[in-house]
Length: 300
Ligand code: AMP
Image (cartoon, rainbow, N blue to C red):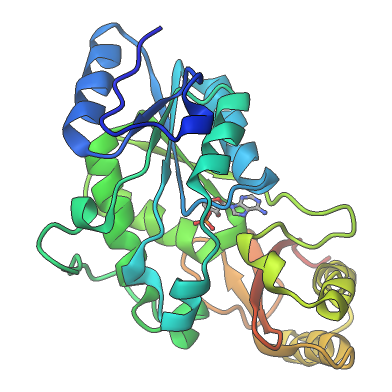
């Protein structure tokens, strides 16, 4: 085994076989070598503070490819709130240990200067309105930052397949759109949401929930599940209202939006007749914002 690490691997991780890259050129030299050897490359982009949701993507990527590379980069341009960026949990050393356990082959953990050598220049891409609804309304500019970093990472890694979670459903739809528009030859693989036993979707931000908020947070998914059972009884508007009431009556959360959308166009549906629809929700606790979603069946 060899290691192409360009910077010193943290002391605890020195005996690990996973390769750590902090700059682009050595990473690409390694990947080119693997590509020439006929290996397929899988890629998972993360902001670190890894949990089992991320690891589901890593496992799937490892199963379906010869080489799996994971990036850990807290992307400043996708944060719309400075406090959120400052408080975002960071622990690269622990992340590397977790990735090593899953037999991830390499970690790309660049600095902001490596990813944005000319300052925070954003990709100017028309996202066909996909970035204007739901998260886009509440976090203006978020998706331009997200798509900039995903485009850069896909250009650097040039993976055969890249894995993204359905947890960030709008993000996944926008990435699929961008990859299609830019003719990027990477297959984008959507992966199911991984949840705690009580239903709360795993998120790096969950650690910021207070004890009381954490105890009540499963109401988000349980309400979405109950809503699925009601689509033959209530209109989209009535169901939106019902979901909002169930969640807000806990006293801990304010619902920012509940949207019933087509999975590809992200356009709101006005009835339950279509196929491939989703319910997406964003909920604000005192300091923490949570998102979740669930597929909707066609009504009968
Ligand atoms: P993040 O580190 O939050 O940028 O997430 C990195 C990737 O992990 C994204 O593709 C997310 O959608 C995915 N992800 C985060 N949480 C989960 C989860 N609970 N289940 C499945 N995928 C997830």
